[in-house]
Image (cartoon, rainbow, N blue to C red; front, side, top):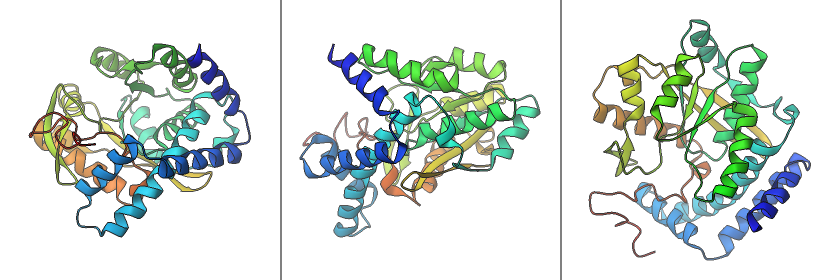
Amino acid sequence: MMTEALAFFAKGLARWPVPLVTAMGRGLGRLFWWLANRRRAIARRNLSLCFGHWSAHQRHQCLRQNLISTGEGLAELLLTWWRPDDQWLQTVEVEGFEYLRDILRQGQAPILLSCHLHAMELGGRVINLHLRQHHLPVGHVLARQHNNKKLEKHVDAGRRGFAEKTIDKKDMKQVMASLRTGHPVFMAPDQNFSYQCVYAPFFGVPAATVVAPARLARRFSVPVLPFFTYRQAPNRWKVVIQPPADFFHTVDEKTAAHKMNQLFESAIAPFPEQYLWVHRRFKNHPEGRNALYRDL
């Protein structure tokens, strides 16, 4: 009952003026910063692991900005999933759309590869909006299902509102089915994995990294097109679509995982505070499961 009530409230909130919703998100982020919580501790540990060369003051400032951005990212998710009209997205800048347009017009459907910058899903909705405007097949979404099945029902419906189809993160057969029918597939393989993965450095730290993008690219000649979404200012976003990442087709899986993480590092570097540092990226580690977070 509580989940249904919260979902009802969130859907109503998503219809409020966009600046008000995102301002509320920043307010929630400030609560994340002021109130002691495990997610704040995880983000602090991740920043310490990945940016040990920074000063303590730099990491402190990034942590504060990251938690505020996390709250704003939650507000952006509400808008992305449950705001019914697309007018608020018309002003989002899109760079490099021609790479995606040209691949689709050649009869191929790419993996749209990204990492968990806070506005990532907003970027997916914007890309699909542009695909519709060009009368091209929209991208389907590969996503992990929430443990709360009642919440998952609402989130999945929100995603399908702009993506038509969602795919469970382990269902590679459905990924191929979408690609074969001409639909790009949004994929964000930068979180911790415990299956079909190799250890590859992420900001210098061994990270369990999935090999699925490399396997799909090599076995089925699937193009891989990176894209990243940045919040440039409150209520101002930019989606950057990069040229195809050809290394997935030319190197072995472990090298591809390493290069993919390097790609993500370069995407995170301009706005490190906008990345999902509250996630236990290094939960699986050569020193043991949860070894880097056990004391938190």
